[in-house]
Every structure is written in C-alpha cells, then in structure tokens.
Image (tube, rainbow, N blue to C red; front, side, top):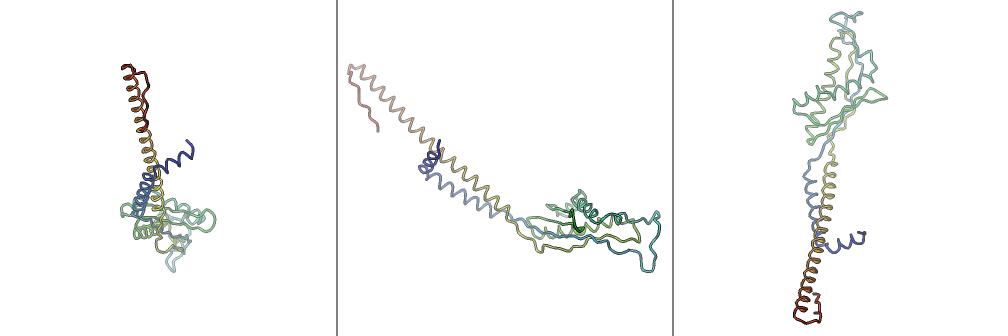
Amino acid sequence: MYWSDFLRILLRRWYVFVPSLIATFALAYVVATSTAATYRVSSTLLLLPGASSAPAGQATPSAPSAQATTNRLSALPLTSVSAILAEALEGYDVTEQLRQLGLQGTFAATATQNGPPLVTLNVEDHSASVANRRLAVLTRLANQQLEVWQAASVGTARITADSIISSGPPKALYGSRIRAFLVGCAIGAIASLTLAFLVENEAYRRQHRWMGDQDDAYAATLDASHESGNHGAPQRVIE
C-alpha cells in the first residue's frame, strides 16, 4: 500500500476517522485537565563548621576520654561530609521516618561534587502543602543526623547545615498533564485509523461478497439456459 492509497482511504472514510479523532482528543483533554499537577520545592543547605560547644570559661579537653571524644566529622573536608549527609538523607531510615509522618513521596538529596559543601533538597508532590512539610522535615532531619554523628564529641566545633537558598512557594509542574494529553492523542489517533481501516475492510468484503453472489447467479442462469436447450448466453446484469 502506497501513501496515496492510505490517504485515499482516509478521505473515503472521513465520516469515521474525523469524528472518532475529535472524540478521542476531547477525552484526552478531559483526562489531562483532571490529572493532578505536580508541585516542586527545593532548598540548598550549606554545611558550616560552627563554633566550639564548650561552655564559656571552660577549657576544651586536650585528650579524648570514654565520655568525650574528638569530632571525627571535623577531620573530614566539608565537601565529603555533604556527600555523606546526602547519601544518608536518601537512606531507608529517613524514608521510614517520612512514611511514619505521612510524608512519603518523591524527594532527592544531592551534594555538589566540586565547590562549596552544599546539599540540595528537591521535593515533589501532588500537594503543595505536603511538599513544603516534607522539605521542612528533611531540613530538620539533616541537622538531626549531624547531631547524631557528633553526639559523642564534646568541646569541639560542630558542623551544622543551614538553609541558604530556597525556591520559595512550590511551583506547579504540568509535565504530567502534558504527557497524559499526548498519550491520549496518540492512542486516539491510532484507534481512529484502525476504525477507519476496519470500516474500509468491511466495505471491501461486502463488495466482493456481492460480486460473488452475482457470479453465482449468472452461473446458475447459464446452467438453466443450457438445460432448457437455449444456447444463447444470457446477458449479465451488473447493478
């Protein structure tokens, strides 16, 4: 089949193709508009070395003891600490805590590879308020995780994570709606083409079945003519 045959069939069966295409496009639009939008909010945490936690007037211990040990995180570059923190925030423990709070969903924690010690938190959800709450909990859990890692250290500088960049109110992303509309349009176009070709095929079969019936009737008339002794061939009538 050539493209000309393809177009000729569509033009011949336009009364099937066009209405079904319009109907499926309208249905795709309804589905796309009813799909909930996705909201994204982000925040960037900067890791700071902080100040000594020793009380004023008290000397910092010069040697670790069983109760007071040195802060091992402070011996690492802050960029390494940010990478460890980002990995921990995407771990099972944080995910489980979010689930218990009813804030499970999509989020990501990414540390900068080169540059300042930054951890970027990206949160997506179908609810803007839930996205804001999840981001706030992740920021709190980041500092809690740092506190847990440094709980045994006394009198040393403690690393903290401060939010320095915020994306502001959650931004609506319409990618899911656009994808739903495009998928619906594609399915509608395929269904409309299929329906048009089915109608064309059925019309073709009916035409050939009618022509076969005409041939059978002509053959029966010819046989009856021979049996009756009339050797003149009857005229074949094509309606």
